[in-house]
Length: 342
Ligand code: 13P
Image 1 (cartoon, rainbow, N blue to C red):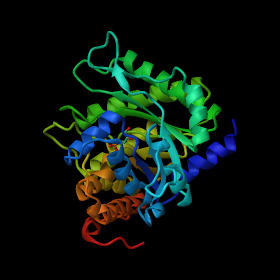
Image 2 (cartoon, rainbow, N blue to C red):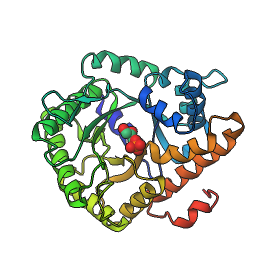
Image 3 (cartoon, protein in one colour):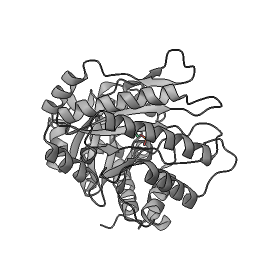
């Protein structure tokens, strides 16, 4: 394991003004996304769509890395360059989703455990060969009246730590993603409590598995009111609760936190990131690793029609620019209708 390499890649991924594009939707999820714009999920449609995201001119000013899916890391641009090469040419770091998805946890109704540890060492070696420099594993924690259970949290934390240790052994920076879902009617206080408990377990497991904190990134959820909670917290409340929660449990040795958007609208995700970056005394870089919040306007502009590629690229560039501004706490609503000025 080359610790300096890991640290250097982790720091580049959270370089000021830059963040990560999560484009690692599994086959089922990308099918859902394409269906939302009435486009069938053929291999060529998935490729054409992702080519827009990976080759938009100027986006590399705001995007440090892209998380790919197994199919995507093997695909090419229309002019025959591998996606990995196309990204590298823009100095965007390619990454790869390596978990095999969250599956129902036996004996724990309503809870999930993420699979994919078997054979992971060999898969990581192949992904490194294909050009990946970092990896992602997502655990999912749901909130309900009687969940999450300590067993579900601890089992997912253990799997995340085993994955992270294997990544560092293979010279890949692990992105550790324990997502506490925003689905439900719970209050922001409950989301805070479960997020704190989850992160405590995750960092305990990372410590037990001797993971080098300087050579990893955390991909947490923001602390939010449940989607169906009647009392929705304000932007400022979300920012303060999230940073307060993270400060309690995330060691300052971790170079950066790259938030997921988790079902927030693209504007909400940007506003929350912006407000967090305006808070004082932040020990880590606070950045983004958005999927939906970066892609929603692109899908809407593209609609599966090659005549719309330029409009889709413009939408992606604009969203990435807004999030880049939020990295500095310099985003404002007027930018939504402004042209990107860099
Ligand atoms: P969202 O930003 O859409 O939550 O996706 C991020 C991600 O990579 C989930 O694993």
